[in-house]
Amino acid sequence: MAEIIRMPRMSDTMTEGVLVEWHKKVGDAVKSGDILAEVETDKATMDLESFQEGTLLHLGVEKGASVPVDAIIAILGKKGEDIKEILSAEKAKASEKEAEAKEEEAPTKSESKAPAASASGSSGSEKSDASAPAPAASAPAKAPAQASPASQAASSSDNGDNGRIKASPLAKSMAKERGLDISQIPGSGDNGRIVRRDVESFVPSKAEGSDSKGGAQTIILSPVTGEEKYKEVQVSQMRKTIARRLAESKFSAPHFYLTMDINMARASEARERLNEVAPVKISFNDMVVKAAAIALRHHPGVNSSWLGDRIRTNEHVHIGVAVAVDEGLLVPVIRFADGKGLAHISAETRELAGKARNKKLQPSDWEGNTFTISNLGMFGIEEFTAIINPPDACIMAVGAIRDVPVVENGAVVPGQRMKVTLSCDHRVVDGAVGSKFLNTFKELLEEPVRLLL
Image (cartoon, rainbow, N blue to C red; front, side):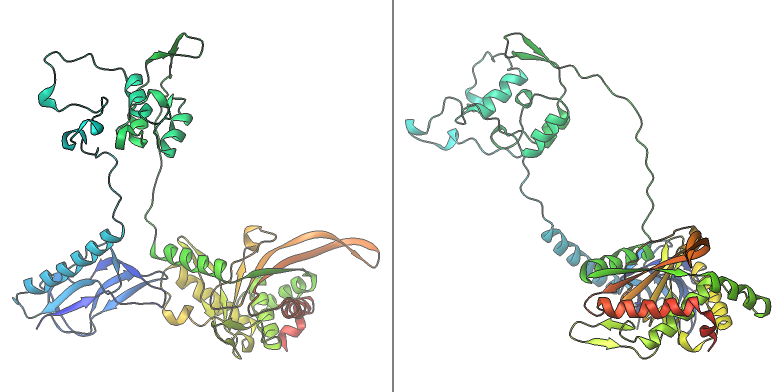
């Protein structure tokens, strides 16, 4: 019997995936474990593996298409098996969902449909109306001259309204922006109401009315020519997820910020000496990760998460390090960072950053962070604030190391300073807790030998 292959959920935040490449085509034999396709999720490009065996009977998604989780992407079965019934059932489900969506978004009754003339259905003199249009059959042989646009607008707006112009607020606003006299625009809405399309289609000319001084009123608009240009790109799955998760974080977690200025002179000297003997190059970011990990061990309240009805305080230290890629930011995780040396942290960070840029990260590489560091110092940014990366309670934004004059023992001397800003979720971390963490972090970088203990 034929089996349906649906788009799997390949990460905890995935809602849809992009079919990057098919590795099988219709008619191919498929074994369990074969790679059917490559799928771009919100965080990486991953292989889609088949857990069934059979002949590939149908491909439901074209290369490059975006597919919601659980949507049908392929059908496996016996060679020559009839799958029309399966496809019909899936099509019916899709149509039903589409109909439900349309019902929820059904537009209001169109303004362009004028109400039926009440004169044709009235009886008695009290219902008669001189201004109501007569039926076409009773029209006189000689048609009267067509009214000007101004008189049409006036007749449609003055009946029983004491001269008030019947126009939608949007139409009035558009007319004002375009320098048009709203009373000269004929209305096509209910009871002659002027609506948006009337303003958009109105071509101004010499008005057949008079201005306040009794002279002819003329509207002249000089044509403005030019070519409108823009470029649009499809939003990637990664960018969609970043937008959704950061919006949720920013508007649900009450952020507050703590900034500290750190003397990096000794850290700079220590780094130079370490790189003389280290098997890999030690960066300032590696030192920041190590110092943060040790500080988190001393201040577990910062190494916590808000879980709605409880707060989780983590005893392990998993530090997420934000990595910039073309589509946005990825946050691979350095696990048990407090127990790793600087060389180990450096090598692991480089490896994970390379995998992130090449979209080769696996779920185990990005899940489980308890604290996050975002460093823009290499871009020359001196100070900034970052949005908390759920489920963490805090994220630390690291700026560039600056050469600045500082006062030491009453004298102005050259100095090296770096600013860091801790964004805290006030539901979990109070100001005093965050301040103590930053003080420990500062002490570790200003006395870098402590990073080696």
